[in-house]
Amino acid sequence: MPIPRRSWAEPFKIKVVEPVRLTAPGQRLAAIREAGYNTFLLRSEDVYIDLLTDSGTSAMSDRQWAGMMLGDEAYAGSRNFYRLEAAVQRLYGYRYLIPTHQGRGAEHIISRILIKPGDVIAGNMYFTTTRLHQELAGGRFEDVVIPEAHDPASEHPFKGNVDLEKLEALIARHGAARMPYVSIAATVNMAGGQPISLENLRAVRKLTARHGIRVILDATRVAENAYFIQQREAGQQGRSIAEIVKETCSLTDGCTMSAKKDALANIGGFLALNDETVFEEARNLVVVYEGLHTYGGMAGRDMEAVAIGLEESVEDSHIRARVGQVLYLGEKLRAWGIPIVLPIGGHGVFLDARAFLPHLPQEQYPAQALAAALYLDSGVRAMERGTVSAGRNQDTGEENRPKLELVRLAIPRRVYTQAHMDVVAESVFCVHEERQRVPGLKMVYEPRYLRFFQARFEPLA
Ligand SMILES: *Cc1c(COP(=O)(O)O)cnc(C)c1O
Image (cartoon, rainbow, N blue to C red):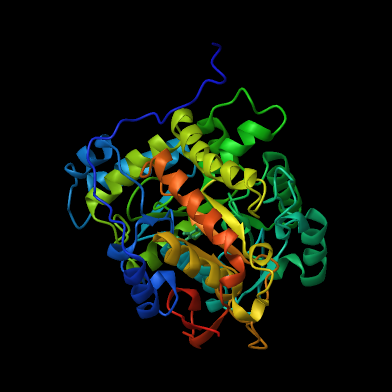
């Protein structure tokens, strides 16, 4: 008998295991009520398969754990800082490194330095913490992602691309002096983990350079972005992930990084820069908000884990299996006719809640309702990426109504097996079968900042 196909497998074997527990339906109902129908407020003990986020949830390698023992917990000048600095210089190519406790620490610092009140920051779709720091610094975010990014069904291979005409029109309207930098995410989390192409980034670079505008990269998932470039972009097939990552960074002036995602660490982040003046200012500010410039809120052992994780994150075999697992789950759901964002992204599968629950109007938070329903079915925890996450308009106070009303099944790196993915897919299938019975929600508590983390809801009817 011929073998129908040759499978790939994870490039690791499992050395340590952590038990997970399947709870009873009654327990789940009590838990989600207690959590105000917000999966962020569940206790992880009550969760079976946790796809809330891929942030800080990776399994570290034996090398990373060994590295933790080499933590040099000096207040100043820890050797792990120099290891991390060298790794960033070698793999990303930036000159200067500012460590921060996580990505938002870096966003805070760069926003404070570069943004003046009234400035406009263009970007390929907003990210929650990134935009908030830009706004708190007095800036206003303008979305310049291509329109396909807002259409869950569009199969454009690079839905993270910048609409160059839109960007050019924005520069013409506000003037380059009001636009300190363009904010480029690779991949675009809020669009479903969608990549930006090298060709598009080169064009952004050319356009902004003409006007003297900087480009700051959100490098949180730059290795996953590189994988899509390698797979989809003309002329890139023969190149390694490491080469593509380095070229991506070379087209920008600096990056903010959450080391909790691609870099396979449980905590950490950094700001990396090429401009010495901006670096000097950042090195000064980090002391105020994060910690001394050679630790920035991280322990020495954390910096070591990030340095090693960065190296592992650009290995071709790692990234192929990582994105491969996401594709496995996505393809399964797609084959069953479940509405998901296409193409399948790099860090998770995004359910299209509007198509999934067409009986719920957007005011009833369909994505929030779907995430709660999925938890009730199986104990699988996902996250809302829709109206609740989009928050309110800065000027009018009205709720933003994003075109994308999504539930994100984010896959932690190196944590779950293919059997876990099967259980998740089957639970989504069952909720889909019973979708008419999923009730809408009303918000009964709304925090002022980043409301999705702590908002509370009650089911309607
Ligand atoms: C997680 C994330 C951040 C913020 O990083 P934290 O480490 O959570 O502070 C910024 N941008 C993107 C795209 C992210 O996914």
